[in-house]
Amino acid sequence: MSIDYNRHPCFNAKVKGQFGRVHLPVAPKCNIKCNYCNRKYDCVNESRPGVTSTLLSPEQALIYMDRVLKAEPRITVAGIAGPGDPFANAEATLETMRLIRNKYPEMILCLASNGLALAPYVQTLAAYNISHVTVTVNGVDPNILSKIYSWVKDGNILYRGIQAAELLLARQLESIRKLKEYGITVKINTIAIPGINDHHIEDVARKMRELGADLFNCMAMFPNVDTPFADIREPSKQEMASHRNTAEQHLPQMRHCTRCRADAVGLLGEDKTEAMHGCLTACAALPPAVKKERSYVAVATLEGVLVNQHLGEAERLQIWERREDGTFFMLEVRPAAIPGGGPQRWHNLGRLLNDCRAILVSDLGATPADILTKMGVTPVTISGFIETALEAVYSGRDLNKLRGRQQKCTSKGACMGGGTGCG
Image (cartoon, rainbow, N blue to C red):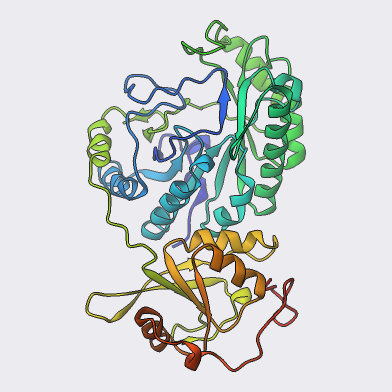
């Protein structure tokens, strides 16, 4: 089923009264500290970014999605906007998106991020057909940014001041460039903070246009208690209109933003977050799903009968499981990692296959074999019927008798045979 991207109410103001969105609060951790942000979780009466009344696991989010669609069938967008950053919670974010995409192939998938840790996952987003990404960029001058962020955390290293600002800005610019390389629609959120960056908004819009961004959303800062910016006033409507008019010289403006919560649900002008609060809380209380660790096997196949495709040439992978009665069942088809990007392609594939114990292929290069093995997915080069190979994998039998006789690809770079690259 094809996806109608015009049904995204945040990116298309004409449909804001016809179609809605649901935000799935599966990303609690954040990797930066904004001086205007106070992420209080249990605050059902407050509507602002970073707030949610509870948190969901990916499995709970899928159940919640089912119930939301029964209550409000006009929902066309499933997004993750916190309450932290999706890519500070990458595993939960990608698993949630995978579950939603698999069950609701027509759903528009959307993410909102600060951009610090986004770039390594762009290939995976494209593979899942996550079509819309919002990046919050509050400045393109590190001196200004250093006043907005208390710290930036990259892995286990904490940065402050100008160092933090330079790192964050570099990562944001890289992320936006990469998103546009993969054809993903990009919206820029910029928080207007009086006396801090409100004189700088046109510079941000100009730079974002250069990077190919599609839409610009200039938002008024909402003063929050117990934050460094608690005493800075909220910009007036007249000031915001002026900022948007100036930025509009460079990029189309979003003027209908409702500053959604991380658990928002409903139409933009007909919000049902409070009405769905009980449902959200009930889903969060569901017992955690019993997750089968590495219970599946991925297969590169041309027709679904034989293992007969080189990993570097596979655009899709079948995911198989063994039932309790010992029979095999093709569970779903997942996109393979998009060609290009060097070793990162195989790291992305490893994440896509984080529930698979092995991958059956006719051949593969040394680099993907090494990366996938280290990520817990055993590559098996094999020829023959899929179910015969699966029986060997699940029973732990010696696979040597089933291995293909073709010459192995030993390329550590691009494969010179198929033209798509296997390294």
